[in-house]
Image (cartoon, rainbow, N blue to C red; front, side):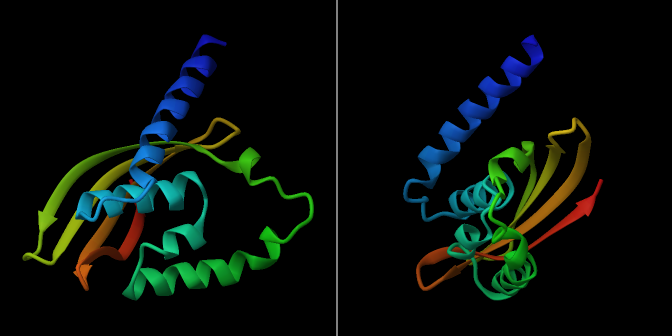
Length: 142
């Protein structure tokens, strides 16, 4: 019971922190990467993540939106009950010139049934018209 409350508190604090970041994401590689991660993994909001994307990332998100459209339209679908607990850690950052930064995250996804999934997330941001966008992202089994 105490562990469940602690997880709830951590989730709420993490959500609050990420909400503060997302209230007008900082125009930086880190800011857009963190906000993308929040929208995509925590909110399960591909359309929200789409606003922060360009290039291949946009193509991937549009494909996911197309593939999940019928499921999301189900009348009794409650996404809140499917949202996993997510923990992530920035492991590495590689600057690729002045206009591109790649981030490497270790991600742990804990589903509602208590199973843990470990992933590595690689997310690339680029500077496009004075605005940082996510250009590509991939997850790999860890």
